[in-house]
Length: 359
Image 1 (cartoon, rainbow, N blue to C red):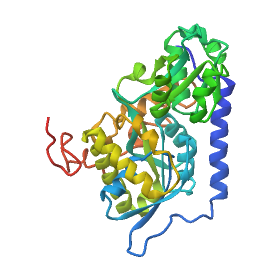
Image 2 (image 1 turned 90 degrees about the vertical axis):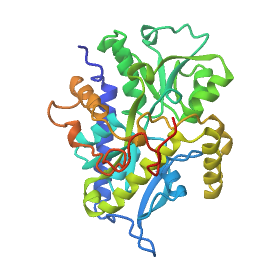
Image 3 (image 1 turned 60 degrees about the horizontal axis):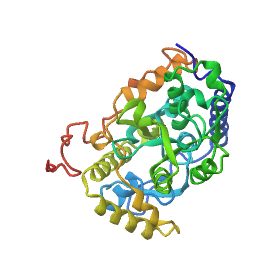
Image 4 (image 1 turned 135 degrees about the vertical axis):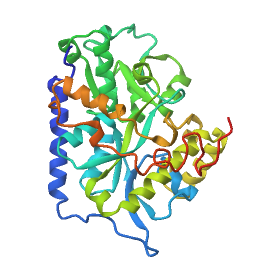
């Protein structure tokens, strides 16, 4: 089997990621372990959000699903690896990233554990890798010497791209010739249309607005590779889980229930709730982007983690020389114990409060 991640670019991305982690760990060695508590005794969880979007945990807070924690926004991020590095180095309490990036972080020595699925691909929500209709690109081989626009290195877009190229029969040497270009998601479509890149990784609102304008189509999608699948998880530091088990439990149960709420609630009601939340937090965000929301993107009730969703990336890294065999096992880096849809509190078929969902 060909090795698809021994390129100098990917090695540099991994080394850089681990170097940043190490540097941040050094800088944060004297940082507070946590953000403390509120006047009424709730544990404060610092987090990074996403502009013009409502995360499941922000929804959970608005729905009243938390009783022991209070969320504190520390700014926005567009990079999963950076988000979980911030969590690992005590800048925030939890983060979310692509599972391959989570495995990399843990393999690099970061003591974190996945506690709940955070995003994925379902029938309506997925990431497409788009080309211009007039590009003449119809196959993986056409990408040799071309540029693919991604949001960050060492994460979902890179893993999916390299896996697809590998599955399509390109050699390791040929894959090295496909250049990954880091671009802000908001600028990726324009870069494609202006011929600065040849392929654009587009998801959620960015995918739907691009499709609506026409002239582009997907060459491949993450859903093509693995079907409906959970791709990312929320992680907490192990020391935080040990010191604040009730806070972590409250976060997981509430966010799982909010995820379930998204999975079964009519779209119009979801969008109305999102609009209210965004306007209430007063960050000068564009609520017009909400019209492109289609689904939670998480196909599993309540975001329960399946071991294979992490193991597939452990195996990927081992196969491609990025991780020694046996160093990391998926079963050791995640837990579903606090998820009510996994621990027996609610049946998978029930709603966010255990009620039976009409079929």
